[in-house]
Image (tube, rainbow, N blue to C red; front, side, top):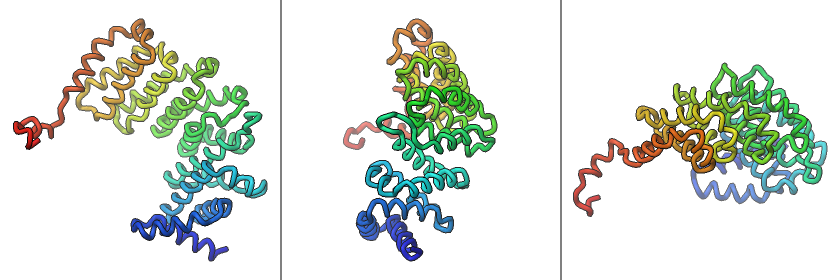
Amino acid sequence: MAANMQDFDGLMKRMLCPENETRSEAEKQYEQIPIPTKGRLLFQLFLDAAVDTETRSMCLVLLRRILSSNWDDLWPAWGKETQEQFCEQLLKSASEEQSAMLRKRLADVIAEVARSTIDTESGRQTWAGVLQFLEMCTTSDSATHRETGMMLIENVPSMFGCDQSRYMAGIRHMFQTSLLYAAQSSVRTAAVRAYVAFMCENEDDDKVLKSLSDQIPAVIQVCQHVVATEDDDDVPLQCLCDLATSVPKTLQPHLNDIFTLCASTVADKQKDDSYRHSSLEVMVSLCESATNMVKKKASNFIPTLLEQCLGLMTELEDNDEEWLSCDNVEED
């Protein structure tokens, strides 16, 4: 088996080779391996800490792809014992992994399994271990564990299955504590992503929306912090835009705060364009998805919004001077 793993390690490295011919030949060899064997080899190679991070990451990417596209060929063929060992080791690895990139890859794989272990007939999540793992992550003092838990919810907001209503108190607590997690901004950003994914997944369930809508101020607070400090990208603003598009009614009590934040961000030409553009998109999305609500509750911002739209359309970069000075069409 060691020789087989050594050969498989070499195959993975050739698949990462920048030289096209070598990579193509390796990919052909990889495709010849039976799916159950392929899945097992990928996970075993990942578990070998002596293997370089790039190869281990590649193994998890390919494993997730198999789980997503070939679940019915892989899972039954593994049998119950192998399935249980795999799930147990998967969660153990995610709780112990030090590399941020590999933790992200592991969360992706766990999410794929959690998505597929929801029984299609009953709607029940049959992998009890993943829900226990999620609870451990989201109540942990470890920022990395909390972030992993939020990544899982973002990837599979339906992971609770038909028993979701039973877990709502816990779900609410998960979001509340992570959105307000003071120690690390990356946890708050991950929580915003997870919260918005969950709200959008349940956009037709008024009970869920009502239960969690009081978390909106925390989401806005994360957006305000990101804009003020610029210590993270514009993802929280993009998430706010998703809320504006999918569940705008949850934002109604907070329109003044949202428009004030977004309008001031767009107006600040010293801010990175990504923050300004995402802020504008939030306001425009609200106008499109909840026109009457904006007219009633935030009409005083509409003239400013129109002015800012026109202003952004006419803004020119410094390097556009050359284009402006060109009078010959053929030279342009």
